[in-house]
Image (cartoon, rainbow, N blue to C red; front, top):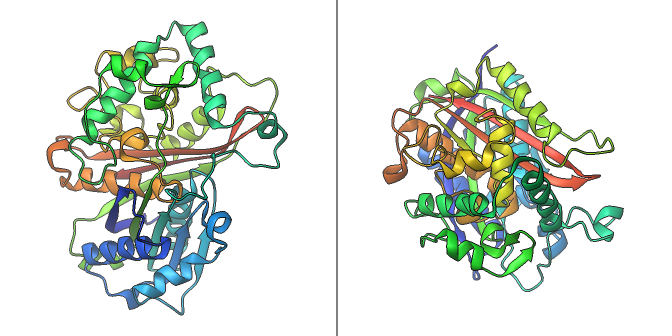
Length: 382
């Protein structure tokens, strides 16, 4: 079956954009992706717009049509997508499926979010869920996983802090990252405690920002300005919500990663880099194991020994990840695709993974019954 192609990408720096709207941010990212591909707006046949919180904050739930119109795209199907932290990667999943099914030769994916506003409150997993009402908001959920991993596998707070140190070092070379100043393990551990053992520097920051990717068919890719990047697999899954949950081994994570490898006909040994959902330091450690980058229980040692750093065995989050690039929820999953594409093109500058030919983007979103509500994995190749 023909594989979808990522034809162009664009990203607006993550941070505080107090004078700009969600539509403004999304439109700029869309424009940059079209410009990158050298594609006129009228060639786009479908649009997928991702956003997680604007309907709650600003009362607008059909932003995608407004964003696409700003760059001259109308009279096409437009889908507005909300799926927690995987909103952007879910929009990418839908666009790839539309292209693979022949429903569109070109589809534009845009993720945009504006979170640095007074109206924004605590990210939760759903105000109607009983576990959220009892206090299981995101930091608490991940802190439980951290405590369990420490108990079962001897993972240390220093190893978890090393994830934040590594990702900040990577972000120093990323001009669109929100935080680029280096930090030490000692600084990470001395930061204010959020939920034991997770300090503030081990929790991703909210941000404003936007990212976009133009997905097209192999036929449409023949006259592209940029080198084509092929989508080998993109998978979307959800939790099983069975009780009891194994908090030290995320079954949903292992399952969805395995499905993506099977679909792509590749394995962890074929990867050159990974962008993963490091919403908290323990998240990245758990994802190492689910992705097969190391054995179960060895994630803490994996990062502490430098294997996930630039120049290491398999660089993880060369962009700086959510911890340092920032986490404008609807844009995050698309920004991961942008980073992987730039790496596979050899256009990542000082953070370039040398010889990168295969990259993986991984995202998770939402909590339910001790499991995740959404998990996406995309594997791309040069």
